[in-house]
Image (cartoon, rainbow, N blue to C red; front, side, top):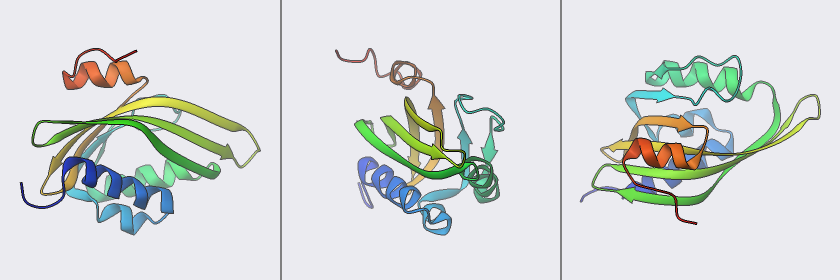
Length: 137
């Protein structure tokens, strides 16, 4: 396989996300990306398309946070163009509220870029949607 592995593509994208640099993050996602958040965070659209959609998501999602970080606690590569990740979100809202949330994401990768991202309220839901079976205990 030429280009970055699935794991490298996902890690590169979220290093850019965590840096707070939207343009760097956009360099890691396909121009025709489709991103579907889990619906866990209120007031977010349920589907964002293309770089303009990612910009809209960034504006709507990042705005209320004083600080935030996403860390992978587990990542599995699935075949040639997919990966699934268990993600721990930690954030501090501008009003001082601290949030820690565990969730899952399923990625489809094309040309070393995230092409489709779907978030799920739990790791188990992400695994099931990806056809990756049950979570290990």
